[in-house]
Length: 131
Image 1 (cartoon, rainbow, N blue to C red):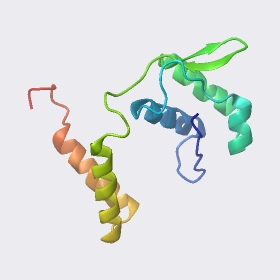
Image 2: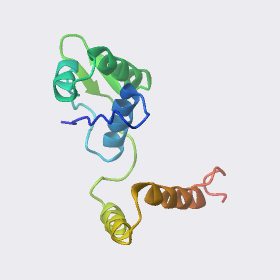
Image 3: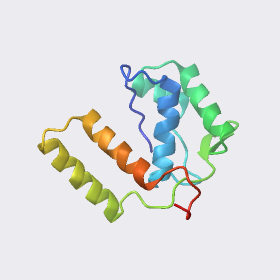
């Protein structure tokens, strides 16, 4: 089951943090269709956030078609995202690269900037297959 981590200093709305973490879990295969999300009560107990915030996040995920609420049963994953498993060799390579970047003295923002540049270089906004 997914455990949400709320960063109150991130500047990102709490409900969006839940949405983003759920989407990331769907992309990494940590959540699959049919899996149940924690109840609002469980999230509130674990994170000390307002239950309405959890419900807002779940409504957003439902609006995106990623989850569905089943009355009296909970909220369940409807579909997955992404095409690669979270435990692929690429993840191991990225984790190794990230460790080396940290050992080289780069901080989180430095690594994020480098990664963003690399993403933009290889995933430009041109039509797929025409770049």
